[in-house]
Figure 1 (cartoon, rainbow, N blue to C red):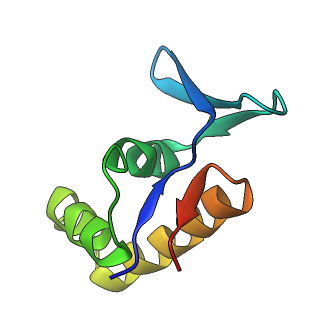
Figure 2: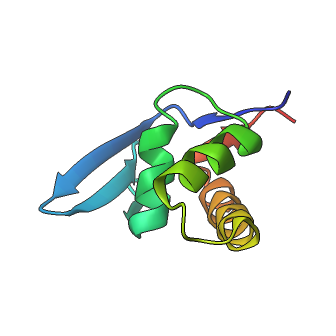
Length: 89
């Protein structure tokens, strides 16, 4: 089962109710929205997309599973494209 994990060399800085990630190599700063912040926190340990979807389905039981899946896919792709998380394809 393929899993997502936090990329090395990324520092997090919480500011009030928000979270910023800083890439050590480049110095780039990323502001995470609520979903991305929740994913980042959930990836303290590597997890598959199915495991993340099950977690978010438990947390948001009134949200349709298809909506959770679509939102999760978009957020994971954004985090991957910014090299904040890795996927062991």
